[in-house]
Amino acid sequence: MRKPLVMGNWKLNGSKEMAKALVSGLKQNLAGVKGCDVSIAPPVMYLDEVNGLLAGSNIVLGAQNVDTALSGAFTGDISATMLKEMGAKYIIIGHSERRTYHKESDEFIAKKFAVLKEAGLTPVLCIGETEAENEAGQTQAVCARQIDAVLNTQGAAAFNGAVIAYEPVWAIGTGKSATPAQAQAVHKFIRDHIAKKDESVAKQVIIQYGGSVNDANAAELFTQPDIDGALVGGASLKADAFAVIVKAA
Ligand code: PEP
Image (tube, rainbow, N blue to C red; front, side, top):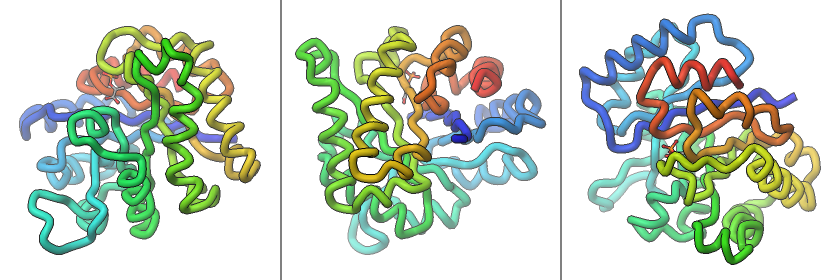
């Protein structure tokens, strides 16, 4: 049995004050929730602050990005060991916003995956096709290519204890979620793709859906057998909506 993970990606939003209010609301709304792992990824500037605020709660700290190097002359970068020291566990990599705006390649993202595993952190590997790729019938090919960058260099075992987030780019921040059936078909494809290398790894790997998940559509998405929770952007900035999503999982 896989335990779902619902993770909030705050992106470039927040302030100390906002973090305090949001975490307080989440703690109130989510106290006692057991059937679902919960994580929030604030901007890196607030990791320490939020880690302190989360003390004694069932919400785990996450982060939105990591560099491939552990130290050295890499101005502006943040290492896996620094994230670990700050208390973060789930680290988002390969988000479409980083693939698009920072031109991150599959190979570079695979290196981040390896660095996180090495540090004992949990990679949350985002994959997904653009609208044009979707319309051209390339969804499976794109997802396979993005997974293969890890699978073919680190083996299927690298996905033990890791998380994949299927996030169709056309659904992120658009209000246009994939339907439960559309998402399920891709999630099943992803699981089957990993199963070709290692069935037991495929069975246990958490595959989240991400893309305009909200308090109104989450429950239906979670009825699908291969959808193991969600990576949530916009709705993770509202304690009430995020709590509804977690409870639906
Ligand atoms: C995301 O940023 O990963 C995301 C899915 O955003 P949203 O929920 O706002 O679509």
